[in-house]
Length: 187
Image (tube, rainbow, N blue to C red; front, top):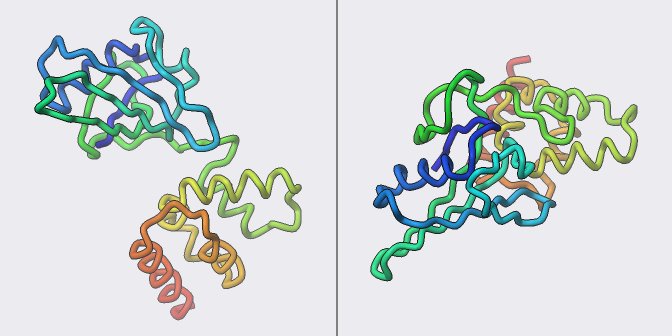
């Protein structure tokens, strides 16, 4: 499930949101872990501390483990998006709909920047290329779904789709490649 939160959301507010999403009783104790690609797993154990205080950012998966009766073994997997409206208080669960999060930035790279870098790989340093392909591996769905993807040339698309480390469903990858091929045919 997706959950939109503010960087200022406390761990206690996150746990309350998880209780609502899972329909757990209000006093159910929860343990929270933050998981992010190429980072250590972080236990969010201080209820007063904010997500930002733990270094949690957009694209972080939050695993919520409720300590419920033995008959119910629930686990909430929450994918974190920053809430658009900085004036909103606390956290909200939106089931995947709702306001779109601002442009996602990971290690200084956005989807648009990644597509531009792919088109101009010769001017990128080795470190920039490593970060670029790390970004593409993690956020492949967003990169392939971006409007600019259909403007990449054949070599650039092949350099992406042949990567073994892409995090994308193969059927979705096929659909995006089909969209690219149809757009190329019309050019």
